[in-house]
Length: 335
Ligand code: AHG
Ligand code: MN
Ligand code: MN
Ligand code: MN
Image (tube, rainbow, N blue to C red; front, side):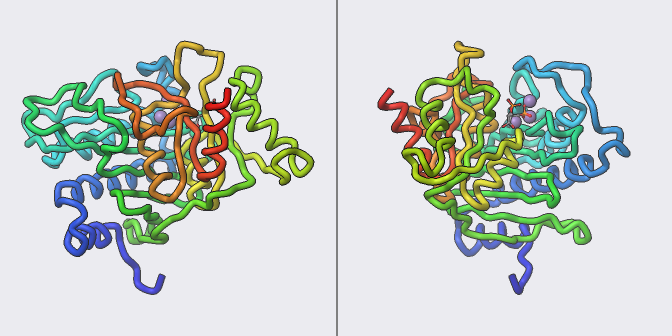
């Protein structure tokens, strides 16, 4: 790119030229990006910053919290609570919603986040990230409560993630395609490095935690079996497999070169719809993927159409290259 376009300029132009985002939403995205920059610095310090290891506590889903899960959560809250753009926040690491304290003005947006995705990769120096989703308060609402967050994913007004890997990359949609920004550490700003990201409709690469194979449902087994048969099987081509165990990094690969990502329901926890969280992980990622021409379902329906019934709701996730996601979804219909 000959002329460097910063995230700030990109957003200002989205607001001014395209009339696409209101100023409060622009502010919100800038603040989230600033928080991600500061999380990125903490991640980079690693052992030198004393940020590795567990914190000795558990979150509402019974996961052991890492120090960085808590640090990232605090950074996001502190960055966002005073700006006047938010009514409340919700996070994978907090039991209930965080209402903006009344010493600050209240705005009309709701921010949801997975402050640190890929916790099991923190201590081993593998890519991790932050995922966020933005909703609007329902109209004529008197006082924010948890119910205001329970909106289907197609109502999101912005969504994105920041991946902390060899580069720190922020990926964003406000509903008119997907743009990627790389952090320039010398300048301290995110620079637009790719616009109009597209996911190829076909792929030869799948991502799933294969160690759970014996627990999967028949349609998922069928799909992966056929991939594994390669050229000699019904698919007539060889497949490659990748599993980073950080959804951000796996989705980032898919946005970059295509592929399919699955974390399906399985028999280990038959009463839970899946492992991943609808509001903090599946919805923002599904919107990004759809905005890049891909698809996202839970095997039966479009993820963005699911009406959440609780904040920490979980969901089965199949997303990525359109034709592959449609195939897995078709296998579910036939079952
Ligand atoms: P989190 O670290 O936010 O709890 O999310 C971890 C998720 C997701 O990032 C990843 O795809 C998946 O869990 C990995 O699960 P396995 O350890 O079962 O592979
Ligand atoms: Mn977690
Ligand atoms: Mn996560
Ligand atoms: Mn997390």
